[in-house]
Image: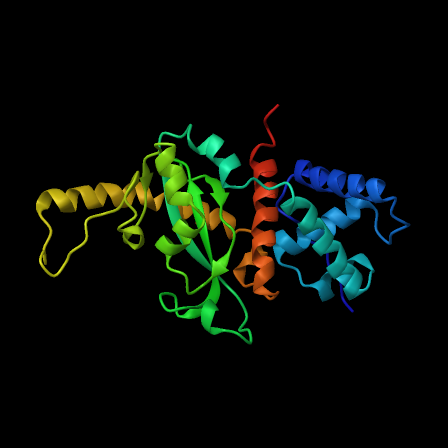
Length: 260
């Protein structure tokens, strides 16, 4: 078998953060001797999440069994997901923003036995729906738990209580046409209708300005998907929420690496 060195585009701060959580978990449970120390386990988990390395590749690279590699990654994900912010905690940051941008994305998955709920008619593929909130600069602020891909963006936002939370906090929020009817503090572009086949010049001008703002929200979705594991989930869809929450924690550590 051939091997080669590889890199993970993350800072040592992120590695140390995860390693410290693993170390604390082992000390708390008085864990027995492990094949990898906390630092190596953290490196293995980050290689899976950021680079999308398979368990087989990780097992070969770290000289452990495939089952051990899977167990180490799942343990790291669970530790990170346990400290992820929920919407209420995230709103403490969001309410301080000049405005927010709300967007939805579908993360592809493998076909599953009960595939109908996970098929997105809009995207023509199976996946899970994740709602993303970005700030005025397009930076990722929060991402919701995953729902089956057939869920409409507006329905998903209502299920998670995002619309009510943004409205209660009086945060002006820009969203695309998929959120029409959200009301509250959510602003969507004008849409042509049967009784209004054409838009006025003023409405078109407003839509163009709205599109420029909303386009920044695409950066947050792109940021989320720089974690290659989200290119296509090959795990049970029910594990997608913990995966997204773990990535959010790591992202916050990474972007705040120069703070303090």
